[in-house]
Image 1 (cartoon, helix red, strand yellow):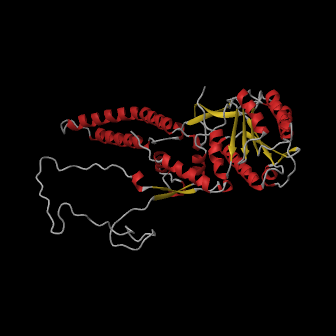
Image 2 (image 1 turned 30 degrees about the horizontal axis):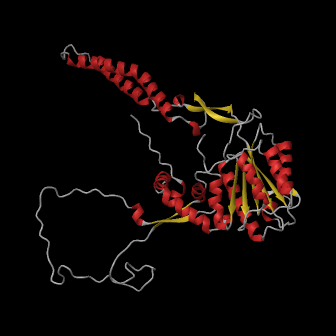
Image 3 (image 1 turned 180 degrees about the vertical axis):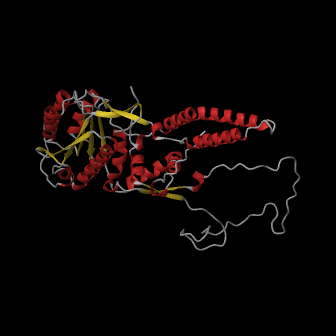
Length: 427
C-alpha cells in the first residue's frame, strides 16, 4: 500500500479546503451580510471584497465532556451576605474589557467581540450572484466544428506532467515490480535452499567452493532485487483528452437604457447601477454571452460599453426607436436558431404620445416570439404611465418570458435584480 501526501501550498498560505467548509457552513449569515453590504455600498464598488462579521453565539459548537457518573451528594456552601428573596443590583455599563463600546470603564462583567473575517472579490461575487441564472437558456445548433471541449478519453502512455494519472501509474509500477522480481526471488530462494543444504552436510562431504559460489550468487541476486526501480518512465500513465464538439449555448444580452430629458440624473444613476450589476453577473457566470448596448432618447444608437455608462447625451423620448433597433440587430446578426436572445430595458416610463402602443405591437409581433426573456425596470417613485400599462399586456401574453418591476430608490436595485434573474424550478 502506498500513500501520497499533497503538500502543495495553498494560495497566500491559506487552507482553501477549510476556508470553503467554513463558507458553506455559515452561508446563511454570510449571505445576509453580503446583501446588507450591496445595499450599503455603490454598485460601482462591487468588485472589491467585503469584511463580514458573525455573532460569536452563532459559531459556537457543542462540547461533549465526560460526566462524573454514578450518584453523588453535594453540599453547596452558603453565604453571609444574601438570603432568599434579596434583590441584586445589575452591574454597571461597559461590561467587558477595554472595548470601544459606549459607557464608562467597569471592573465587572465580560464579553466577546463578533467574529470578523474578509471575503475575497471572487467569494463576495459568488454570494452576490448565488441562485441567479439566465432563464430559459437553451442549447442551439452547432455553428462550426471549432467549438469543442476537451473531454476525458481513457489513459495514454504519452502526456504532460500536469495530466499524470497517479493511481494508474502506481498500479503499472507495482505490476512491473512483481513481474521483474518474481524470477529473481525464485532463483534467490533456490540458491538459499541449496546453500543451507550444502552447509548442513558433514564437514568431510561439504564443498567449500560450492558454498562460495552459492554465496556469491545470493549476493548477486539480492543486488538485482534492489536494482529494480520503484517507478520507471515506462510505468507512467496520463489522462488522455480529446476535443469533442459541443452544442452551443451562445447568448446575447441587449442592454437598453433611456437617456431622455425626463430621466433625471438620479434616475440615470440608478439605471447605470442596475446595468453594472447585470454586466458583472453576465461577465462572471457566462463565458459566451455577448453584450449589445443601446441608448435612446428620440433616436436609438448602438454604443460601446464606455459610452453606454458615461455619456451625457439627452433628448426627448421615443422608446420604440430602441426596440426597432434591437429588432434590426437581431435580424442582421443574431438568428434565433443559433442564439439565445435577452433584453433588459430601464426607463422612467415616460414616452411620446401613442408610441407606447407601437412598443407593445413591436414586442408582441416581432420581438417576443424570438426572445428567451425580456426584463423591464421602471425607475420612478410615481404612478405608472402609459408604457407600463402597455407592457402589462405583453406580460399577460408571455408570463414566463416577460418580467417587469419598479425601482423607487437605489436600495431597490439588488432585490429587484435577484427577483428578475432568480433560478426558477424546471417546468
